[in-house]
Image (tube, rainbow, N blue to C red; front, side, top):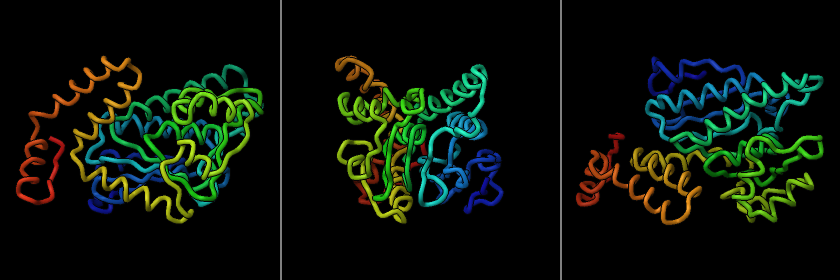
Length: 277
């Protein structure tokens, strides 16, 4: 794993080695992660499942000074082709289920991660690749990218959040059409339907995502964490309970150094220097 450009001796997270991920600290608070199996369309094999679970777990336990993550694919043609079907060919039921349980854990750990993860979809995202996009907080995509949940054409079904996250993004009826037909759709449709937040030429997707990540990282990290948590869990509640949950999250921020710094900076007409305290 690439060491920090800002501290070549940085221990901890950037000292971890991943076989299938390329990670780079591109700014003091930003981590760029690339799915790094370009020879097979960045397909998710068992090792990538282990690597992603390790990465999201490490960030959950100690994100160090990382405040936002951008997730992309190596290359400019395919973000992620989904599960590695060559590895799965001939798998026993027990091995398949064990692998899928690993995938489930990494998707849940990504979904529950307290710092934001932006998908920079710099190529096609199929099956588990699209489910990865949907598990991120939001996504930017290449104008050339195509998307699909192809599982029913392979004798299975989406099993990493696709049947749950897609309807929440595009609505139930549209999600049924996408999943039951297994038909691909393009980036402009993904944008119009709510899968993507914005589209850019292929070469600009990662840089645009990093610019947005920097805007997030410039904000108070505890405020970002609490706001993300309020949205994530509040969406699962009825409205009045969700309001109460939001207020509890809000109250955790009142007696913080960053809240005092934010108000002071506003009154002094300067940029705040947030420290996450």
